[in-house]
Image 1: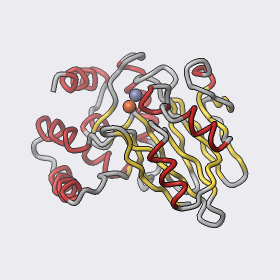
Image 2: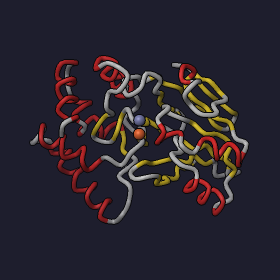
Image 3: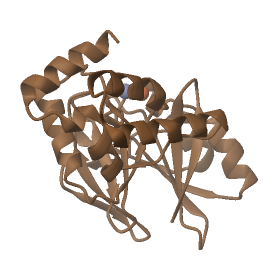
Image 4: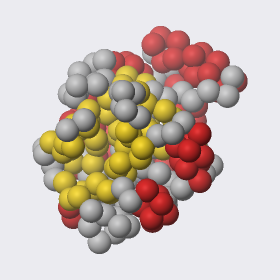
Length: 239
Ligand code: ZN
Ligand code: FE
């Protein structure tokens, strides 16, 4: 399995998870259809599934058109069935969704939205975390509580350290400035910031990150308790 990163809209990422043997693929969070179609046509990929982490337009915007064009199936959280366009396959927390070649655990991680899920491909050690865990940050709390978001991040923290994190947006540089402001003496963070700037200068994504890097550098994963987490989340909203 291989992951291709597709830039969408202003700062979104959609991802293609491709079985290199037969070129069958899933697309995760297609914000829009055109960049996906361009890539799929150029590389002769068979698009089989859309996997949606949550219902926001910048994650499901390509659903209608891609389904019409490729007749694929759309996978999303069961309680979001009325707000994920064209959803076909309803999944729930702790379930393993599988279609022979693709196999993903579903982890319910509410906070950003009530129905947000993570697709965790255990064999490949890859997690698609949408707008819950960003590299060096976490999503805004729109529908949930601080406690829910804190618990959701705690679930993700328990994934194996080498797990690659593919998130919904390229927010890493801005996030890094916030982490640096509130944790000045983190050497791992300083090192990561150098790498981030180098990647961006070369027009490369800063994604994927890993759980190990996030545990070392992401201040939202490093807070000890709910109170500190909530304070930081408020500060970040106005950063
Ligand atoms: Zn969102
Ligand atoms: Fe988003």
